[in-house]
Length: 126
Image (cartoon, rainbow, N blue to C red):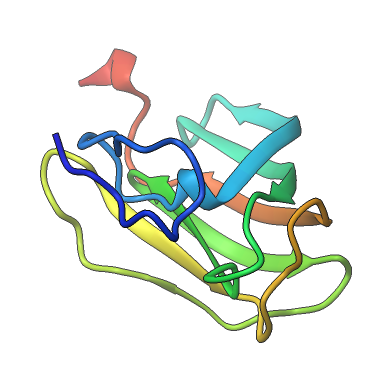
């Protein structure tokens, strides 16, 4: 199991099954708003994550795990940040990197709103 440097936020042992930087952010609340498009066999909507910084350092970016999502837009606290989906890395999917432009102090909360849709048929159709 990979171990983080001592200067990084808890936990000490990193989960090897994720591309995210979950160790730097605590999820306080998640709201998912989706409609099911039965004709196109897709989910469309948005997810709002309320994330709390766990560190004063290295929190200028939020990295989330994604898999087969068509990202329409992203905003953080009402602002439109730069974001990028990295190439797919099996079996984990694709990392979504959201640049905040500055470090977020420990204990500070941000709201990340990701508007998206599934990009492949629902798993039940595979």
